[in-house]
Image (tube, rainbow over all chains, first blue to last red; front, side):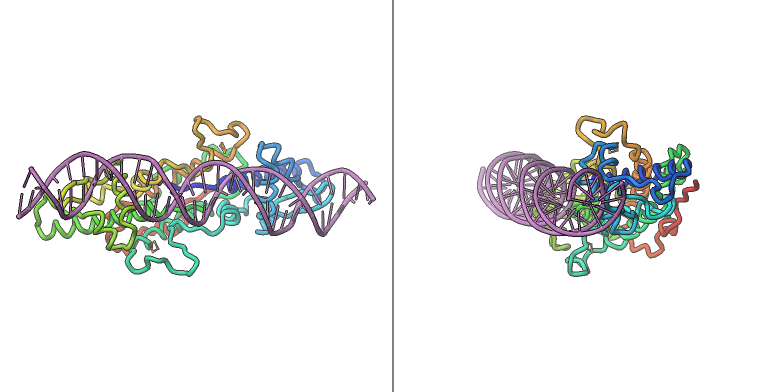
Length: 162
Length: 162
DNA sequence: CGATGTACGACCGAAATGGTCTTGCTTCCC
DNA sequence: GGGAAGCAAGACCATTTCGGTCGTACATCG
Ligand code: FES
Ligand code: FES
């Protein structure tokens, strides 16, 4: 029904990994300049995902301003900002593009069925809701095994009356 | 980022249409046996969508127990239950299949990356959240132009602390 | 300079999607 | 009983998206 592409999945994994590295580096008081910088290959190996593909994903993320890259020997990628300020929504959007829940996003602006489709509006609301849900989750939240994840997410978070 | 397939979209439209018809028929005090029964072709024409495709979708829905079908002259489809008791989630699931937000649903149960993928758990929570969100919206909610849709959906519905 | 590593685009095979066609069965109505 | 109207269930096909590879160019460090 709704699917996160594998690319986005990989991206999140990588981000999480980077967040952990940054955390570790900070604790060890390491040189700030090299804080948690990891090569694409390293990350790919850690998770057993195709290196070339990961590289491309990271590039996308870098272009989106979520990562900073550094070429050359001992180069690699690192988070552009603290993990807590990067939302999963941002990441997914950067990778999968600005897709919308309704399939009526055509190239020429409006939908083919504009006019006789009344379904769109309510669904947009749903979409907004999901968006804000995703926006509320940061990479930092993924990194730490927060066992007491928000109770609000469990259920009954939305009540529609009449 | 997350997309409803066109089929599901069509399905929801059709359901909404059927719900309206049922409502009308009820008000008119029509023969209950024929309440709001419409042929696939009728619905398809109303929304300008390929009739054959719609037919197939409706069949799926019927198999899922959401619609009841009646063959023969003046046959057609009608809601199996009151519109208020049919959730959008149910519909989407029936049409698009039991897809999950994470791409790690393989045929052989567990994921390939099981073990070294820590991203899965938090995402599952997100998925649950979306599920319950969708479950809270019925066909009846789509049918009536509820301008004051739940404030809860607008934003800030989930707070993640820590 | 050369090793390491990012940047980027072309390319490709496989799968999901959207849609069509064919064939058969039911039920109604004359 | 015989159409016609309608659903049921497939096979089938075209197009797009997705996941992944390759090759080449450029940057940086030592
Ligand atoms: S599908 Fe585009 S408005 Fe409904
Ligand atoms: S992708 Fe399957 S567990 Fe993460």
